[in-house]
Amino acid sequence: MSKAGEDELTKLKRERIERLEQKLQDTLLKVAEQQKRNPRRGGISEGFGGIDGFFGQECGGFGGGSLENEVSRQLKERLDFLKEDDLSRPISDKIIGPNDKMEDGWRLVGGNREYTKDEFMSKVYQVHNDKRDLTNIDIERMRYTIPSLDGIIFRELFYIGHGPITPYGTHYAGSGINLRRCRIHTLGNVQFPSVIDELNIGYNDIMHLQGVSFPSCRHLYLNSNLISSLHGCVFPEGIQIIHLQDNLISKFDDLNVSSLPMSLKQIHLDENPLTEGMTQEELEMLNRKILYKIAKTRYRAKQPKSEIVVPPASAPPLDFDGGSLQKKSRKHKKKSRKYNKCKQYRKYKKTIKGRTQ
Image 1 (cartoon, rainbow, N blue to C red):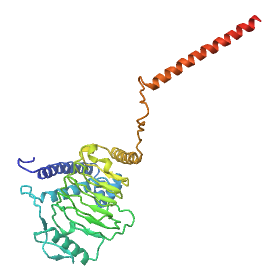
Image 2 (image 1 turned 30 degrees about the horizontal axis):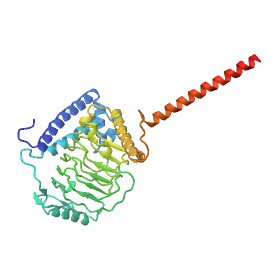
Image 3 (image 1 turned 90 degrees about the vertical axis):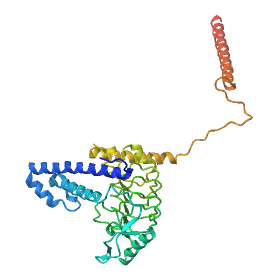
Image 4 (image 1 turned 90 degrees about the horizontal axis):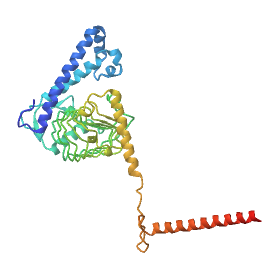
């Protein structure tokens, strides 16, 4: 339960911890039930689960409880990370990072030093220049806590763009920025490179996207945050997949479909209040509905607007109720009736004359 006097972010984080704990209990119960029903297959599935649960997801029928085992592992990892925060202390706005100690040749570890934004960015580029890697910035492994990205400018990266990136990262070939698990709660006016393959800012504490301009990238990871609306941000063309799993989107209007790019191929929305209780088929239907709405909005925007023709001031006003047009039509009717009567009379007279002769 949230405590009195907590700010909104701390309250949401505490509620998320409680929800994940309940979900973990439910998942562990499912795993236990499956292992009771078929212990042999349950044991085999653990061996095929792997680190990223690839076989568990692709081979659900064969793997038995592998998918549940992988889900429970991820939930435990997420809970451990969230519980590292002392929710009783106020959230800092300063960048916290390691001291200047080296491990594995490049990774900075240890210490609890405060950095300014300029010092932080110089450290990031120093590390990547030493590695001679100008394509990927992996800040998650550098163990920095960055409460706010507001005002930070990321330089352009060397862009490769070799083929599509798999969601498992196994065939990743391109440029990217990894800001997972940095405890970011404000993006603000951050400047990303204009074009990259992947931007990962999942597993943070981001509450809103107001004023954020994202880069043109194939994969945009915003999963496992506290986002409740997509209003106020810019999604440029080039974005193909947006990961929004495990957020707080509760209404379809919160997606702000009119701002999403035509290049979008898929948007992941599972584990949001909006999709609670939906089956996989229903999630796919929702995805198709969003893509259709994007295309419809863009089509309407391209259509030329019809212009209203205003008659010149010298012309008489066209009064369709009691004006000149109506009078003209009445005159025409009267003339046509008189002509028809005369015509019928002449025909009748001619017929009578012919009979008498």
